[in-house]
Length: 231
Ligand code: HEM
Image (tube, rainbow, N blue to C red; front, top):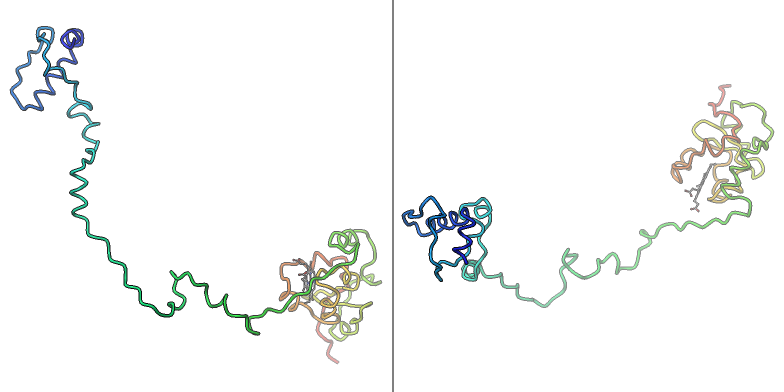
């Protein structure tokens, strides 16, 4: 069968002969014309061609499969694993990164210094949500307490507007009538009244610097804070 195939596949025959020559390092005895080299079927001759072909790029690039002897050889060369450290009974290492113990900060009760000041949750009256304030602002209602023009307001004048029904406060040089906003303030009326009649820039920035006071109270602007006139 192999001889028959070789007659039809001369290239295969040539390849086989060549590969055998390379493997056996023998002298090349194969004639150049494969059609003339019809050999008798031989049991020893029935071997498949080398795959990948000898000298092919595939064979060169592929690494040889590790044989069992190769593995054994490698393992004998490997150093033995380190012995575990002997366990010494005693107190656990303090705040070791690998320890499974919880950090002492979570096991110790909080001291007075670590306790934060509790913020009281303010419940706004119905109809006093931030959306309601936005609607009131754009409604055209008088939120300036009767002021028709923007005034120059010294600290002495500002101080007189410190009542619940007449409260002004200054923020970054601008004076606002905060009275209509008191009931809408998410932080509560009490907190907002702390700056009634004075400059609240610092306290405002400390509490919530992210709030845009100029936008929220633009309809409440009554004037600008100016230095006290010299007498
Ligand atoms: C007129 C100026 C002010 C405006 C327009 C204003 C506006 C606001 C707004 C919009 C919030 C909600 C912020 C948020 O949820 O992120 C808020 C919360 C708050 N404000 Fe003001 N605020 C003013 C002045 C003040 C002042 C002077 C204080 C006094 C300390 C204060 C104390 C608070 C507090 C404690 C909260 C938190 C409320 C909470 O967590 O529920 N605010 N304010």
